[in-house]
Image 1 (cartoon, rainbow, N blue to C red):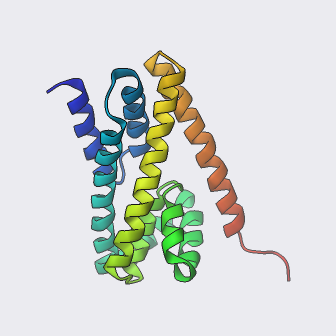
Image 2: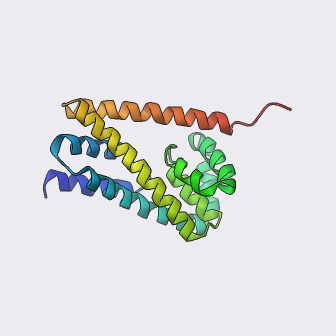
Length: 186
């Protein structure tokens, strides 16, 4: 097995398991695509397939026991704001919110669990999940690819791409936390 195939297998496994660092792995494979001729389309397809399968498993978990899992997640301070934001909006604007949730830390995981626990129709969830997964994996892979094109040293290009991803993710998280905070006005 060559390094590219091994990297794609690792990417698939990481994409499949929601607690593993998919974003970092996908950024790295985006850098590899830029610097070693790996197909960026294949990188996106592998990550998208893994994330989509993971979403379906989380949706099923949410559907058949999600209240307990969501209660546990709600106790984690970092996830509580995202959970609150998602819960309120998934009821009103389900599909677009599930797509946007991908950019939140653990947003794809929480969104899939919530959709299952709210008993969304499977076809609606699958469609929203597929769109969100494809947009998010493309964004992250292209970010890695751009870093790989700008800087020839793989470690530096990964660090550059990761820094940009963290800054963008932090900005999105802060905006959502501000928006999710209860209003103090009477």
